[in-house]
Image (cartoon, rainbow, N blue to C red; front, side, top):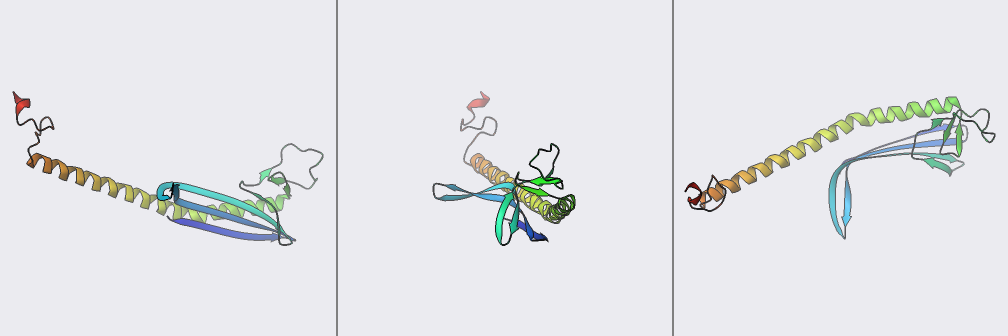
Length: 158
């Protein structure tokens, strides 16, 4: 299992934003005690908001711009993170730039992972075809009819 993990932190005043991006090319499934690796691309994204060493809130989504203002939203709030944390326009732009950089950094590695998965699938397919061809040749030598695929001993030609 190949995993790419990227973590960055920025501090604005007394608040720290910890951004984590994890990309995996497969996952391990637990089948009643048996472990099976499933080739499946997964992506996990997380932003933690930390103030004075304590996590105030977290979000699995990017911050979004506030469109409908209510009376409970501060005047200087430009964007919102997880309905609990309001961001200024400057902080929003900094966070989005860092998130875009993280995606760009891991993207080239993601393409490499996808290519390796495709190569592995192609190799498995070629191996399966080679084994099937060898089995077919073995069956022909043992008397299987190449026309009907059974052991008819020439009765299909009658």
